[in-house]
Length: 201
Image (cartoon, rainbow, N blue to C red; front, side):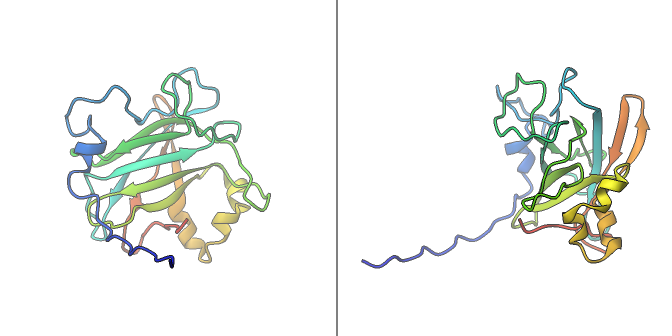
């Protein structure tokens, strides 16, 4: 008997109804008992509490109002915990959806610590972001870095792997001072002259 590989099934986009299945509150539907939401950090979580927000724009500059995002990050000490528990003060994983009115997404978290790359070099504080939306066959993966971490950003091996320095800027969230503390703004451009750098990993 020979080993025969099965053919790959066709990719499909998230479609226009991603909120209905994955972001129930954003769609105005009743939520499940356990929802992975936009609040990665509760008030008692150790570290610098921050708000991260942004928009997703298509190639023509129009808002994508029904996108869905997933976030994965280290805690304030640079540690990852793969176990999601809604009772914990901090979870490394979260989800958010763009709103239909303003087209914005938002997460409440703590600023992540530095973690080592596979070769041992320290990476700058960052949040990994996956984007799901209609018209996208395979979700897009990118990273969010912080503009007030210039020294760490300058030596980050992933940022330095991007040959054009101007393209690295598409991964940097700008800091603003909000009434509720530090706020970082990170707009994701799916196409066009300001297209965000996306990774295949």
